[in-house]
Length: 94
Image (tube, rainbow, N blue to C red; front, side, top):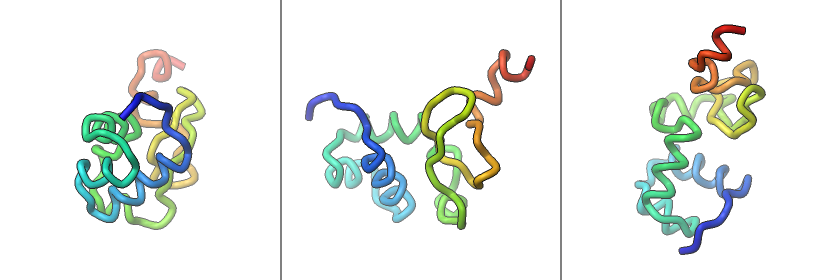
């Protein structure tokens, strides 16, 4: 598998399959990525910080971080800045 950018569809599929309970290997086979790629992206977008029950709640979806400019898993429409950016020194100093 070659290195390629993650499309919106890839990210949506990752979130959907993760919530469904598939393993990283199974998700990788489904969307054509390695286990390492799945785990890396899952970590970066915040999937590892939430339980499957939290992820399955209404309103949870991928949103664009307004501070850092990247996708992340958000629990509600009011959550528009990812936890990583909120913990940064620059953000906290603002």
